[in-house]
Image (tube, rainbow, N blue to C red; front, top):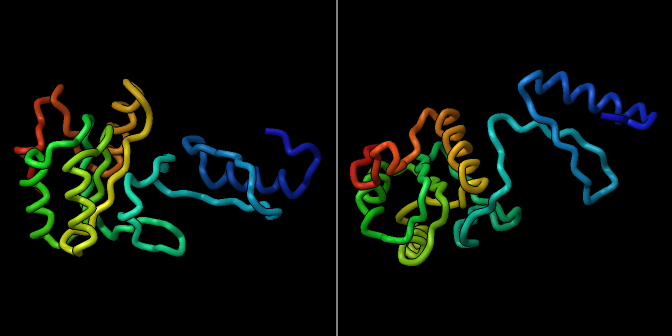
Amino acid sequence: ISANGEEEIGKMIAEAMERVGNEGVITVEEAKSLDTELDVVEGMQFDRGYLSPYFVTDADKMRATLEDPYILLHEKKLSNLQDMLPILEKVVQSGRPLLIIAEDIEGEALATLVVNRLRGGLKVAAVKAPGFGDRRKAMLEDLAILTKGTVISEEVGISLDGMTL
């Protein structure tokens, strides 16, 4: 990476490299302001937003923030509510929020999540899984490793109806 003779930029890049180490990733992005800043993200970050603006918990920042949520990682599209109902009932009883990361969530499944979020019965947010094809599977596996979870996948014989918290 070249700092083009800019001492401040060079120091910032050196600090970034020191902070993330050999296994970290450094991303340089164009800013919307004149400030140059270093932002270190712990864990994993991917560029996918929530599937519905109704999942927003902080309207000022347009963010959906969940504290200590259960995380449901699903490799397929979720559209049938009946498949999801048992796990949703368990999550509601637990009182903890739920983050769903799946290929997509649509139809009655998405509508039910939104209605329950608005009524306050279920603290939930849903996002599309990052990547495409085999890359998506690999990224879901990475998320599972990071969260000490398992990807719900027909390939390994795991389905929603047999899930426990």
